Image (cartoon, rainbow, N blue to C red; front, side, top):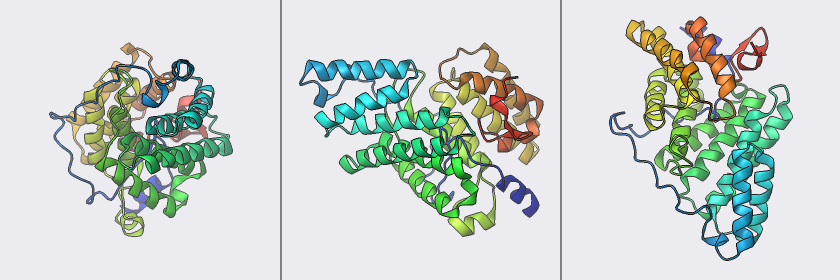
Length: 321
């Protein structure tokens, strides 16, 4: 048991996503999740594309819409730069702070895996901007999520399991986010709550289920918790490729851990759906390849992440097969 835990401990946590992802609080300290059949309701999508601080001037509203357009085209750096300018004019809007943090978290996620410093730099910026939003509004669940996402990107860039201090801080932040989860809905297929569940599920699945780790930092992996969170994400947006791949990985992980053939069968079925799903996120081509590899090597599902599940020293999803 110790040997298997130590083997899995060498896997770097990813996800923390969007990222990825990543994400753990002390298992026994987390609030109990409601049944999957009763998922938390999504927040209302704003009726306008700007917020009160930007309604005063037409130029601010125009800049806001332009930033959203950059996001839709995955130009997250330009979007972040516009949002930063808007904050100088309307610093009281917490939404803008987590929006900037989200853009930097995506930049960290999409940076080349080999560029550790770039990933860490963008992750640090995500943390910093989300923290500023929490200072303005401590109850900002979306700010909390993207603080957590930024922490995950920094930790993963340097090897999250190489730093027990980072694990403890990530765990504490995740616990705070669980108490006050994100609520913003970009579209029917892109709720921040679903993104949060997806990221948290990845961490619980990948982190070793080790009593020694729990004694050291107050947290441990939990494949069953991961599966519950993955089911909650898919219940909110079942057409998302990343949510389906995450659920498939969690099903295969628990299926192998508990020797439950019905979960293995369900996991394969979920992953076989992926080719028929529409691309919606910039990472979808990578997740399609990962789904194929999970079907080929289901016994490795517990250690799956988009960019940390390596084969021959190369990230699986970025090999281009």
